[in-house]
Amino acid sequence: MDAKSSNVFGRIFHNLPLKLVSLALAVLLFVLVRSEKSSIAHGMVPISVLSAEDKILVSTPPRVVYVSVRGPASMVQRFRFEDIPQVTIDLGRVQPGFYRFRDNMVSLPAGLSVTELRPAGFVVRYAEKAERRLPIKPTLQGITATGYRVSSANANPREVGVVGPRAQLDGLDAIRTTPIDVDGAKKSFVVRVKLSQLPARTVLTRPVSTVEVAVEVKPVGHSVRLSGVRVVVQSSGGRTLRAVPDRVDVVVAGPQVALGALTVDSVTASVIVPNRARLPLVLEPVVSGLPQNVTVRKVAPTSVSVQSARP
Image (cartoon, rainbow, N blue to C red; front, side, top):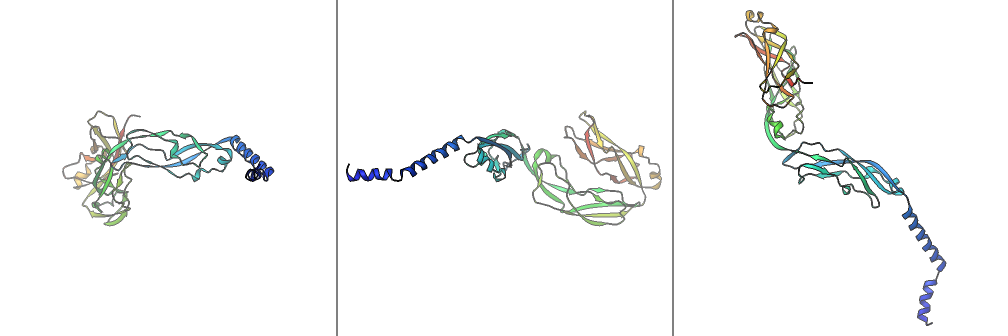
């Protein structure tokens, strides 16, 4: 055997016991890892959905997805669902229909895998997007002091821009404020109030926290309050409808002789429901049955909700 071959064998067999022990430990560790029992963990991951800019998403996607994760027991034991980043789903190019969740949308450490997602997905349904400018209409509640009336109530700004599903915007004639109490009022006043809640998926083009409303109160010659005037719902669609509430209070003014002849049963408050209008529908009652020289000063509440009378 020459010197070169002797040198190679020397390197191989140098510290041979130590090398054999290291090899045995490596093999043992590999076997232990491969034979480690798997485990499953269950938890929640938050979801964020980005809709198409030219459409309104009218279906309701889930806010979280329930995830089942499988992997080696030691890894699953150390795993925390709180460390998984939020899942963002971009629907910009997604067509209407059922959107199915994919396992790879959940970011997991190497060695772990998704075994189940609940729900499996959600229905994607869009509505045509529209934008309009609508007047702000103050909502008044209560009855002024006897002998006084609200002659005007104006908001500043007078109108706001809204964006939402076209079908909903077509049914809006104004954006109303939260109620303004005029009960017992004898003089004009200015108040800041919030806007009432907008229909679902309808938003303002610019944020408006509050609006200023100037309420003008003036004295009248003679007035009378008729409590519990019946609300009649008129519909040309053949539907059976009811008003909630079904009675309102009406303040009228006019000559004393004409007012003295009025009764609750001689006056009617009516609402006319357009054919095929979506329910519930908020309408303002129109008072009829008054003498020629008698005028309406106030109806409380100013609007009623028209609903189906069927259970």
